[in-house]
Image 1: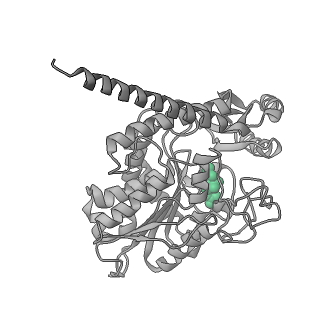
Image 2: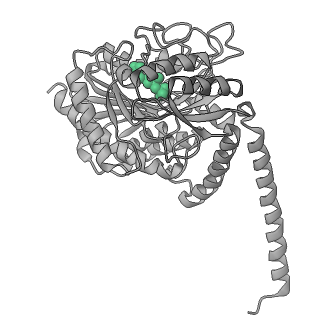
Image 3: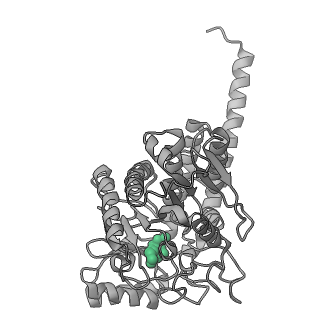
Length: 451
Ligand code: 0X9
Ligand code: ZN
């Protein structure tokens, strides 16, 4: 090959300078990653497999006693995953042994496991940026808030005839909240039932927002069920809690609550309210706490949080024609319905169970063999704990006939790290969409709106 020496020299110099820069970036990245998660030094996580209802009830007491952080609630025949502080690992496992509850270590060193998760995410981030060229929202990795928001703005700009971007409020820390209204008739045809889906109220449940953005994708970008767009008006709010969601990327992977500091005299030390205890339904009566330092702090009053007020206002505005409300959580492979504060059943329990089972059946039929089968039922009965002030109960209490909490799959045997392995994101969002399709059609048949 006849290449001038100067060019060759020039290229190799540029290349090596580039390599040094890449190395520097990697070192900086690694240092930043290592500096994170310090608070989880010495923590361990455990799989728990209670085998009787008595053991399940005992667990609830042990969780309180040993300040256990429950990432995924154990139920009968379904292991859960919990985080335990160093000082309580001895007494907690001893108590488990005493009552005969099966357990095994999930992560022996939570901080190390989180560092590995971060490294994997950073590696994937590089790959997916180049592959997708910023055009579409990638589903091979968990996305930070700015990427999700850019996607929402892009979709609205690209499909102005059907998609409207709404910014109803700003969060406690001043971030915008966004939702999309998707309609072929600009929400003006009052005879159409409305379907409302939200996600990300619990910041650390990372599989939730993509399940909502995928629904957007299927409604406008890759339409395989055109009837759903013709028949319904859709409201999609992928991240109810943007402050908390951002915090799980920047500071603390296991952050669950909002980030407000105005709810209690201790809120500056312990910010945040559990959004799913903040709705005005039997507020702060069961499965909640007045202590802002817990993860189930109900807030100073119902709807103290701007984030839950936004969801309330959407529910109220379209109440007269909302047929189906879904709020996406993780983990557990469950479809849960009211009433979650006492385990009693609503007037529409039969409809809730039937449509819930129909959604679960189609999801299970599309699922992978290593994924658990969906459990459908009343929130409090399935989870074996009652909790008041939850979104799905509030929506149903004001009149939404079909209202569900989805606990999406993840974090059980065969899954890695502290979220569903990113290789399964696409699988989960696709199968969840199949569930949504069935739920929407059933809701439309049962509650067709005004004709
Ligand atoms: O406890 C919750 O808020 C939900 N589980 S999670 O692990 N995602 O935190 C379940 C809510 C169930 N619904 C009611 N209690 N109504
Ligand atoms: Zn949740």
